[in-house]
Image (cartoon, rainbow, N blue to C red; front, side):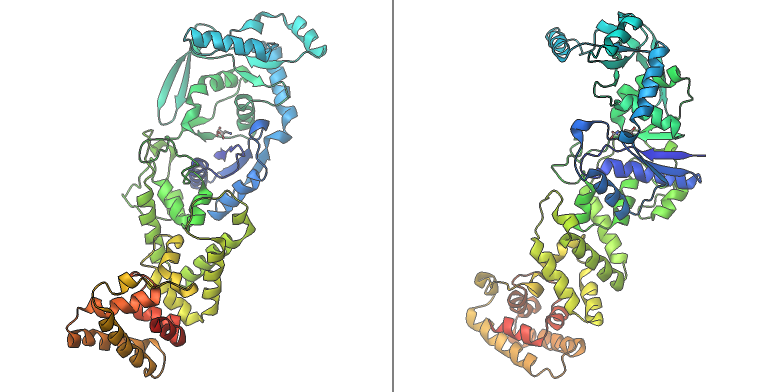
Length: 491
Ligand code: GLU
């Protein structure tokens, strides 16, 4: 049975690269009626971040990627110890007693000689009985694997084919640290084997360690799973995605107001293309057609502009009702402690803005809510774009005098607004239909005045929205309400 896994280290957030792997792993598992599991690789105690595991699960839940089993490596230390001991017994690993001091000196000398830093195998020749005595006596040690000398190590990657390494360039890797924790190399190989992983998909940064992993499988006499190293996802300049710039973190997309299905759709197209050339497709559809072997090894560039475009497409395709539901849950998420507690990213919204917008939405009746969706869903690419556009619904705006009198004199504007206000006062029933009637009248008014159509709307918009951009004017006026509109225009 096919079994795939992600093996994230809890570094504080769900990395986009991890989500990418989870997406491919999960799709491949579904396609093959297999299983997908999550293994938390928390054996690097220096890198441990409080709450990080939670952040991982929340991120996966947001994109609706479920898993069949979970494991936590720090709960499995005795298993790794047993396997490290087995390698010692078989003569494939050895105790190393070198002090940090000696190793630092060694590295310095190597750097002076401009040779790559490598362990000089100093302890490899210590007789095993002697070494055990030193261990029993309480001397500090690590365990290193023995790399065979002067040989070639051949590994196979599903999309890159065979790769050959010269063993002289491979370090006698530490597999067990002094604190009793294994390193990635031992722990991941042992776990992939014991958890019966059939396909190991991982980042391309592991290719250089691949020969060590091949040797470990050989030493244990285990069959190797299929290995696939993903392409390296870069930003548009070709640099690694960085957390500093935000979009390496899945949370960043959530906060900006991207839809999870759009994020999944977009990243599935990194290093892969749909057999029919489609750009927009669901995860369900993806999991019917995706195969690891169709991945490209070439680094794809993460085009945020295109991601925005795609998200905009998804927003447009939501029903008005769904748009409001998704917007509401996004606002709630932004207000929640889940959001507040996380690392801050640059945003135009203050925590209070989210609250104001949510209260405003809640104050609308169902029909008006749908109208609000209708006038916004074609205009925004992500929920975060909603506030600048609809700011005036929730906050007092300032009048920009210069903007107001951009085309016409103050007197002309005043007289036009007086006309418009009296029309509003005498509108009769306050509904969209009567307002649409007023819109037509206002267009006619333009020709009476000899103004351009834009010029009769301009001051209304500037006074109402405090800006030259807003959702469609008369719909906005309707939602804003008679009293508030009159008050705004009277300014
Ligand atoms: N813990 C490793 C990492 O976060 C996992 C690599 C792998 O998938 O094997 O990079």
